[in-house]
Every structure is written in C-alpha cells, then in structure tokens.
Image 1 (cartoon, rainbow, N blue to C red):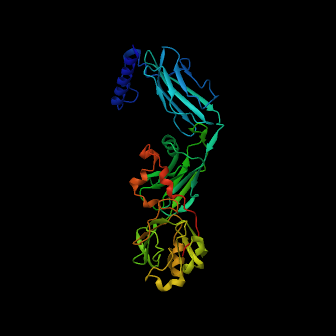
Image 2 (image 1 turned 30 degrees about the vertical axis):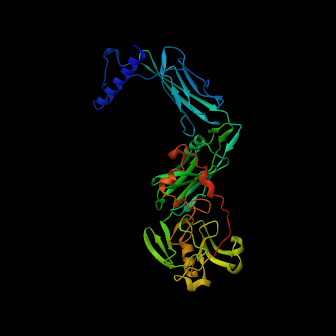
Image 3 (image 1 turned 45 degrees about the horizontal axis):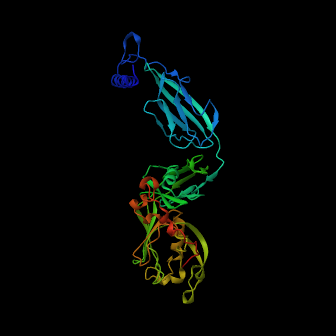
Length: 423
C-alpha cells in the first residue's frame, strides 16, 4: 500500500469511528475482520526510524541552530511534529511533502527545556511515536528587559497598562514577536490591544473602560526568545491589577461644574473654576496619576512669571498630568467656583469638596473635560491621555493588528517633561 492510500485509509477509518462512536461500549466501529485494525493498537516505538538533530534524551543544544527531524529509511514517514518549551510556547516548523523531513521555521528559545513529540506512520498504516526532551544553552547576548506598570494593586477603571523595554525595537517583525509575548488577561474578558507609543514603550487598554471589580494579569513570555541577532528576551516581573467601583468625573469648563459618578449614577455635583483665558484647561479624558494631601505650587516651575506669578501651599491635590494639572482646593478663588474660570489651568474647588474628591478617587480614575477653549489632551507623554484615541486609531498602533507599519512617529509627544504644578 503506498503512502497516499495509507493516509486515505486513515481518514476513512477515523471518520467511520467518529460517526459510529455512540454504539455499544467495547464494539469496534470499523472492524476489518479477523486481521483487526492496524491503527487500533498502541503506537509502536519509532525511535529507530526517526533521527532528531537535538541528539539523545537530555542533550544540551545551541539555540541558534534549527531543530530537524528526519526519517531514517523508507519504512516510516513523519506524520506530525510538536515541539513546546517549558513556557508553553510552540516551535513552528514545516514538514516536507514526502514526510521525510521536518525543520523548525522559528528560532529556538535560549536557556529552556523542550519536549518534542513525533508521530509516524509505516508502510502498513501503523502509527508510531517518539518523544524527546532536550535543553537549549543560555544566550550569551544582550537581554531585552520588560518593566510593566503600574505596580500591582487596585486602580480606577481607566488605568492603562505600560510596558517599558530596555532596548529599542523598530522593525515590524521584531515588534510582532515582542508584542505577541506580552500577555494580558482580564476577568471578565474584554477586548483590548497594545499600542506602540515609541520604540521602547507600549501601552495596553481595553476598547472601553475596564469593568468594575475586574482582575487584570500581565506577564511576559519573552524569556529566552531570540528577538534579533545578539538580543534575547529576559525574564520580567508580572503584575496583577484589580479595579474598584466604576468611578469617573465629568468637568464642564463652560458650565463650571464637575459631575462625579459611581457605577453609572451621579452622586455629587461640584462647583469648579478652570483655566482662564491664556491658561485654558485641556479638553479630553485624563487619568488620575496620584494624590498629594499637600503640595507647594510655584509659577516659576511651569514658566509663568510677571503679574501671573504665584507661590502657594495647596491642599488635597489630585494630579492629572505631569505638566502640572491638578484638581485641588482653591479657597483663594472661592468667589469664582461655579461662576467664572480664574485658574492657571488647574481645577479649583472649595477645600471641603477637594478633600471629598481626593478621598473618593484613586490612580486610574478617568476625569473627562469638555467645553474648554484649551488644547486637546495629548494621548501620550503628559500622563495618560490614552482614551483620547478612538479604538480604530488605537489598534493601528499594534504591530499585530495593523501589521507592518512602524509606529515610531507616534512617540513624538512623549518628550513632555514632568513639570511642577500650575494652579
């Protein structure tokens, strides 16, 4: 029987078994008479028929060389090969049309253990197996480190995830490999994507805000993977985030009011003052970066001088941007709260309301500004403006979803320095 007819026989047998499986237990669905079914028995040991380039069991091999599996003679042909490392990463490969040779088509990871499972078939249609374990040598090369952010903890539903790389990754091929190895899982599951901010930083966010009371785990599967010549992936510390209630705020710069919502219900409306002419507050969604119960705000630190100079001790300050936008207590402008915009860009309110806001938010809470004459909040570089990119544009920053286009230009807004506050 030739090889092609063996494969046809195997397909017919398998299909018949699938169709008649509900018959009585122990009854063979496709009996072939007194000779029995040659495929029904336990697979034979194919060790003598198959050669593996990794050598013998437990061998240590060079990860820069491909893995090859070869049939030693015409007595057996390779049907399937799976090679998986201890991290659960499968090694891709290609089987020749005649079934005599399989060769890996992706690089072996360095410093890991592989298990190779080989299925064979002989001229009589009998199936064989061979399993081999081997170790790859550690890479003596530069390591690509990944630092995830933020630290493990509980955050607001608008908190993006960041991944900072130790080396620049520019080519589309390398970006696909790296991005594909940065794993984000959430419970409940939501649609999300990485976005390359520049060649060393990625952000991850879902299509919409994270669900309330969700859990998000982030880890890297880069360890040992060859990124390019002389650069291999390093181990990375995973992080685990949780979200609390869905807390969000909407600030109307024209209406001079902030609505504070919890789980979809407005629970407080606060009179505010925002940036006056020449110092207009940025429009768009910002994400709480942190909280300071007291901070010294000096105009000189943000380049404001002359008649607009100030030096103030400010209480209950919730930071929204690195360049100095806060929500804070502003008792000196109490006559403007809910009446007119009088600040240098921050959102001022009474001391009582500022303390209440401070106590009811955490890092990751989204605060959206509308109806200001100010610029739009930048997506990157001045805090987390990630939500100001629509979902389709966000996905264009993914090497996996968009494909080949390099996103280096997307990082042009990342040079904003971490300036001091502006009141």
